[in-house]
Length: 231
Image (cartoon, rainbow, N blue to C red; front, side):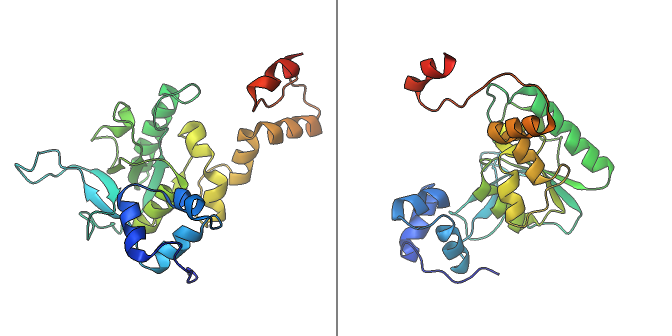
């Protein structure tokens, strides 16, 4: 149950901001309110995204693809959530160092395995060049950003039995702890263990505690400090 919260912006302005693509996190920062305030207030006001079908027919014929996206410009959802058992799989988004083809291969196999087990497979990924975004890989594909806000909105709409984060690389893995804290069922490795493996400081401390050798390392957050750290 979402506690009633004062709107950081008047409701018409908040709706307009969401239609222009401002995230809840950005609106929290711009209005100077604690993190999570905009989302709580938005939900209390009933301001939620609708999920529309991408028109692949240029409006010449009715579209019948499983390509969907979230929008604040629609009054209702084009495709209602099904009552089937389902699993939401987070993709890797854009290709980058450490998050590339191998994670797309993992996402594809996860979707296919979920289907074999009788689950409806739902993919969240915004990279049209990946195999996991092909129309015949999963039952539903959401072309949208892989962020905490988007995943929470999608979970609220689809109500999956669980979310798979470990097939999407660092982008998806870094959401594990926040999703678990929000009550989202994360399938597979415990969210705290994922976070411990992703956070270099936490992982380094774990190796030290277990007496496992590791190369000397340090975080570099300032270019000016790089030379000193190397020395």
